[in-house]
Amino acid sequence: MIKHTPLFDTQKVCELFSQKDGVPITYVCTSALGHEAQAMDIFYRETPHPQFGNRYFGLYHNGNLMIANADRIEQAEFGLVEDDDGNLQYSAHRHDYKKFENGNMIDGGRAYIRSEMHPVHMYVVLGGKMVEVE
Image (cartoon, rainbow, N blue to C red; front, side, top):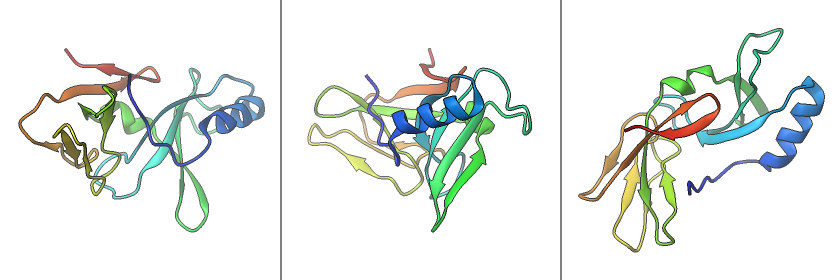
């Protein structure tokens, strides 16, 4: 199971935008899109937004509530490691260092993947879901 650390109440966001847009909205992950040190909660809709054309959007704080096109999340790679409870966790942005009592660690977000000598599971986002790369 993948353990996420969202910034917002993702269920409420999905309900709000599903009602507003008239299509199902699902939470995908919390991540920077590239080298940024700012993560955002990323959501997905199957049909492109009628005005902006994107399927993914991100919500984040920078003093204000911001929304951004997050379609490039499908070009990002995620390295996930097992935490102490057996869940898989990822680094959300370049300064999101996570270390667990079992000795596993992950760092770097989408900017780079830094870990130690233990298994790292590689994932990508495809069709609104995080899927393992074989």
